[in-house]
Image 1 (cartoon, one colour):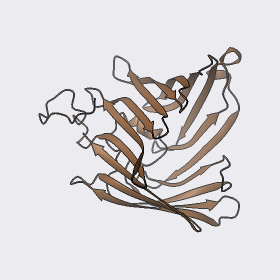
Image 2: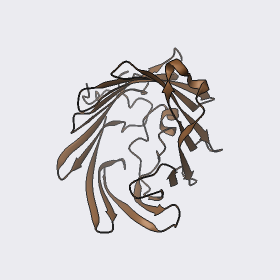
Image 3: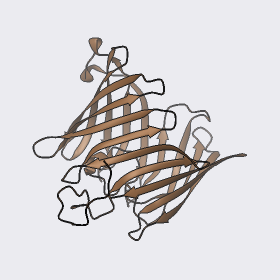
Length: 266
């Protein structure tokens, strides 16, 4: 399914057609040399994503399939999540657009026991077209709700960007093990691995940079502004300045953890 594309650049099935080369094929994450997870990508003849499949070392899988209308505009995607015990959850995610930007995702989720829930995510953008606020609503049983009737916002993500379109600060109002945190980021000047993943509207709702690569992020206590931890990133690049390997090191006091991420391209 994920063989390298033909050397003939006129091949209609080559995802690099019109995308400038180096289209993301897989992302593999390792810890202590052991493969922890793999994400794989497939594209249609226009170079737009049609499949995104995730598998981790615990047996969990997520299979996402993307659908387009007759004008090749992204309309929705389906997602099949299988947990480590084999229970399956199915989702249908419908997009609402304003111009070329996705402003809402309406989600219908069917669980293993047959219960059906409605949920939604709402995106707010700045003048440069980057998502600055992402609101996740609290789901409800489909028999009692639809996407338009959901009113309670469960969590909110707030994002700031620099002029290059890179995320400089991120805040999520959910409570973590380390308390309420916000994060700041600095970058290299190389190409982000998702840079050529199309359509652009899909990249914009991911909530992270699609221009350059994070070299450091620092986490702070939201209430005191005291630093809690930091993560450094070291990269190896190919001849086109796309990362092929990232060594990610998280430090929090005496706690330190290293993760290696490898990127493969079509």
